[in-house]
Image (cartoon, rainbow, N blue to C red):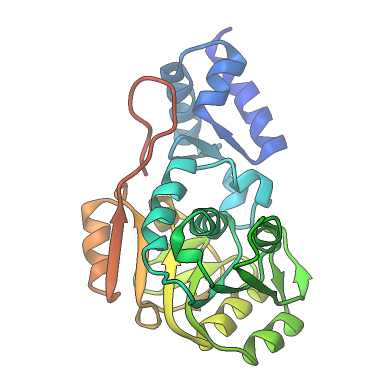
Length: 272
């Protein structure tokens, strides 16, 4: 298969899926991972897609929120590394809040598998996180769901959610973000989701942002947190040194988790 045909197929997959992984494309198209990387690099240079760790996303997903099912397939190793670090910030018996998005969901998975989950209460506006807790055989974890209007990321937002949140109090809130802007802060494409994240921060003693390094190169519309409103940012060590240094000047604590690479191909992944 010639390069132009492969690239056409890659763009076709992106249009239907919103995101693709190098390893999956390599198997699907019967070529090496290095060949797929070259194709993705050429398409990125033409502005037809955006490279991320382990694959690519459509340029349209930079301004709008991708479906939860699409995002959950991207940057799996990064999310696992971030989640494992985040679990250290929870103690048995804590009352915490977990926001929407796939990074927060992976954090919830790791947390519920850990000893730190003993006796905790989770307030969440994430339908997938609530379903995780409900599926537990042990009933040692209590979950409170906010209610509200659903988003593309399977989050519950809007006035109903915000009102429920305002009546409660938590030790720590764990939030994902669609993009990070220096020096502005943390942003989401959905203004209602941003407002609900703000409501969660308002009732928390501590705010922790969970986000992989690719989010520093994304763009969103609605600011939900300034750097001085956040206690800790947990990302992966793919964040370049200059950006990490600038971020450390703005936030109390920046944690760089060591990446977990689940790819089975040879060579290195792209890092933005």
